[in-house]
Image 1: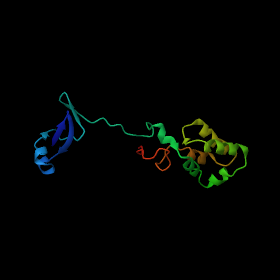
Image 2 (image 1 turned 90 degrees about the vertical axis):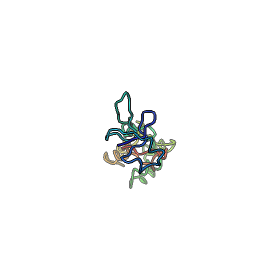
Image 3 (image 1 turned 120 degrees about the vertical axis):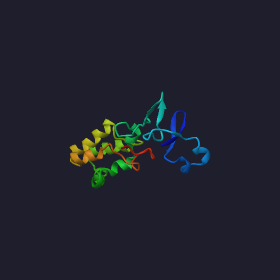
Image 4 (image 1 turned 45 degrees about the horizontal axis):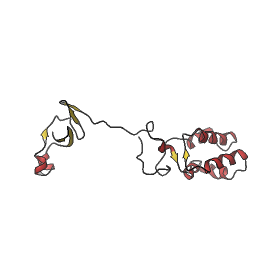
Length: 151
């Protein structure tokens, strides 16, 4: 294995740089241990893997849990219209409270309390409420679009 190293980091690795790269660049490759790959660093003669922060739901920023108001109501499925057209004062308060927001923050306790209120009046069961409050969001639901999807 050979690698092109800049600032003690492997910027390219190849078993055959003469074939894979331009001759001027291939001439700069040096022999490295077989396990070394692009991104690895050599510090004090020791090779170490690159530090990689894997995006998970546990370390995702708060923006991942902010969803559009329409997407929030879509989570209610076939129950959506019954909720939006209800004349029950408690349900109307929940609808009004969520409708005046710029986005729905699924981690906001007030949102969870509102969904639980819908359970208390019989418009949702616990399983449906749990599905509405599921913290796993998709790009098309999020208020901020284009974020990478956590693992």
